[in-house]
Length: 249
Ligand SMILES: Nc1ncnc2c1ncn2[C@@H]1O[C@H](COP(=O)(O)OP(=O)(O)OP(=O)(O)O)[C@@H](O)[C@H]1O
Ligand SMILES: [Mg+2]
Image (cartoon, rainbow, N blue to C red; front, side, top):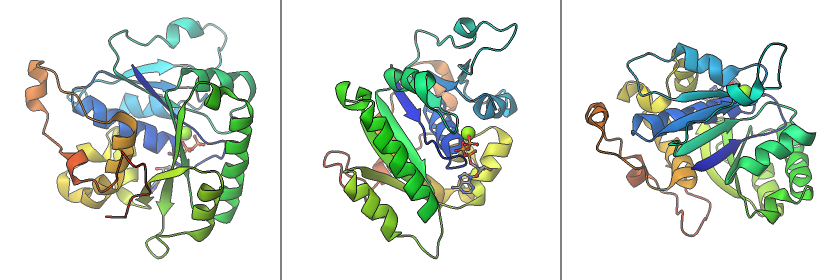
């Protein structure tokens, strides 16, 4: 099982958007996928409730702190055949819950909105994360995805400086776009919207998928016949081998 933690201490950076987009992409490519929500707000699990029943199933796992009458161990069950586990972290995660999430992860993906305030907050968060020693100790991969990038300012120098200072890769730039909002409201991902509604967004997201999952696997399950081949990775311009910052499509 490949486990990807989508996290940033800063609220509203795009954690749930990135987590649900990844989960829906893998699921619609017939990869057994689970979405684990550590956020008491339950945004990812609410998104799952909106998901149309004819679309590929995603297992929802609730890892939010235990509430009266709930058994956390049961709620956070993940089916053993899961190939891609995506974890949606809450804002402000720290202490034991943060360590628990990080220990589960093979990769950590950090969405950040390109503003001075958010870059500073994210840099502090990443330093704290590195100080725990778990990331380096376990050789967990870590990368940043710029989210809600404005068309008028596609390259944001302070963000690039901060990435350089921390020796981190920028795996993608997602423009501020209604497609993400429309998808979120419908319980789908941008890859499940009508083609015309999300062409640019799919291209922008492709390198993020490559970084997380490499090749998307397909099975012989008859259900796969209904899944359109998306061919996302092939259109990507991100060089996953060199790990170099990709050129925007
Ligand atoms: N690229 C984007 N373009 C347009 N809207 C976006 C984009 N990314 C996220 N949003 C919107 O911004 C809001 C916050 O995004 P999201 O819920 O993914 O952030 P979050 O980090 O999970 O927030 P929280 O810290 O509250 O959990 C949502 O309304 C979402 O639809
Ligand atoms: Mg969220």
